Length: 337
Image 1: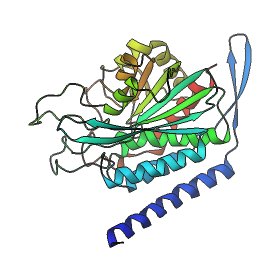
Image 2 (image 1 turned 180 degrees about the vertical axis):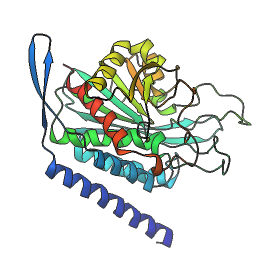
Image 3 (image 1 turned 90 degrees about the vertical axis):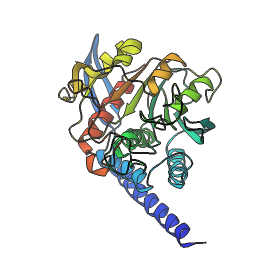
Image 4 (image 1 turned 135 degrees about the vertical axis):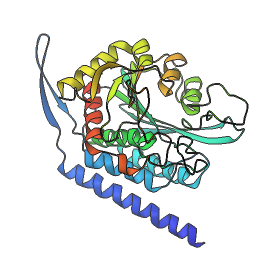
């Protein structure tokens, strides 16, 4: 055993311990909250799991501690093993869908889509997803463009929120079937200045593969929510146009729930641009109405300034933003019947 391998094991043990401490503390402290809301026809009382922002933040930090999660890298393999083990401790079932996917540069990416299911017997299902891989180069940075990024927000934030939702569901089961899917090979897309021949649909390779080769025959979900770049300080979320086109009703319900929770300054009543993200392929190939909650400024027509740069580190992650998105998603799912 060489020194590097020993250090890797020690890092894994530290990360597992960190996540276990947070998980145990949350399991001791958390009790489902009672939400009383007025509905058409009377009062509906539901028991809603709590979302803990400290736990979500720890899940983001744990991913970043593995280093960049670029397909075929050691950090990628270690992070996958950690997430799979964690989700097996939370969910009813976990499926790992492996695929060898050809990237724009000819490399074969050994990808893993990770699917954790709650109430697998339920016919009424919804899907929550995020990508867990990171950009292999910092093509939007002015320095070290050939080096991979940490991807704290672009990747780890959405996954951190979903891992916290999974932890909450392990304590208080949802009323319906919920599938949490972590997409791989989303961010290995072709950069604008690439020397390779142009490749169509070079992003979102994992979700494209899943949409054509579902983890379960005849799988279907009533709707889906994709989380991407959902944890930055000062983030706001406009209504992304592909989401409005394919699942406008779900967009309206989600933004209305956010407003009811007091988050109208973060979930804006504004329309953004149409973005090609994992949800595009889920809508067009799998035909599951899916929306994208993604940080995008319609005024500047840009993602956050950290996007695809080395500034996408834990320094940009904010517990409040994680909580706003996590609580909103939990409430939307809980109201589904």
